[in-house]
Length: 417
Image (cartoon, rainbow, N blue to C red; front, side, top):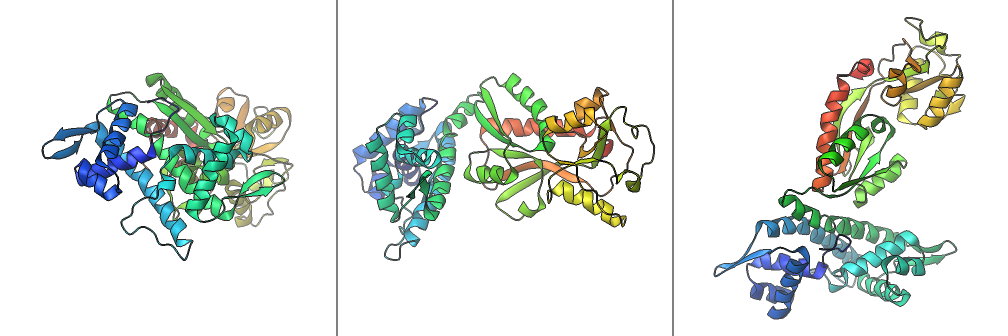
């Protein structure tokens, strides 16, 4: 299969029905299609994948190991589209979702869904057409077919371009999930033959960027040269949206308690207290047993207001009946923080991991200031019920190993075991 070409959804759906019923004839009956059409669909997907999906036996069609891998991932694709079809049907009082769970034909076209997803991202029909190498009328036709099948408008015109309607945003979420599962099929098949490959997109929050992620990525790409890693350093809310849509495989960084009951799964890797850093020759660098009152009047570089780290910092002062200091600078950018610390007497509230190498090189010093009850859990966030691709799984396993090693390093005086 071409690395840029996704499997044909209609063929995948036919293959699923053949596996469920055990024969082409029975699958054809459930799909209301000719046996020859179902046979061609199975053969087309086998040709695209380059592997036999079934053993043809007198007792019926039995999935091969490759077939089982394709069907396992395919089940999630079909389930996502099935949920979308049901939601669309329920949006219309005069229509009902298919009683047998069958998928409507308007959703069983990979290219059509790709055109919709691309248009939603680019907001400009000619740009979407150029991106996928089709004509503008082809994009228009695809959107009309989807809107006719769904029974509502997906876009509305705006000075900023074609924007999704509220219903269109929900529609897009299901489509993106289905397409992202679909792209993993080739990677699942390759993994059966011992080849870990594909693109992994990681949501990289600040507490995982300096040590854990780089070391884990280095190990994975050295061992599996066909793996490519993309990091996304967007704001937390944007990363969560990406995980929920399947555009981001997982997030690494400080866990948020508010998501424990959501559709995300959190896996704690370690905990770490916040620390206060200054330049190596700062007047307070060699002072032992500092107290909060001593440093309250300093010029501070702090995280933005209402961020979890800022809340923990201010709570520390309030417990001591002290007024929390106002920041001179609010920033989460390590380059900005590093530059300010090296050239001023400012103090920075940060995770010890984030400027680990500067501390190891003797450029920055960790002040001797107890920061009790400022521990933050660091870990992985993934979408529940969506097993990672083989490449993402390899990177997750490497991160787990590196996290254990990092928690045992000398710098980890701030780590909470």
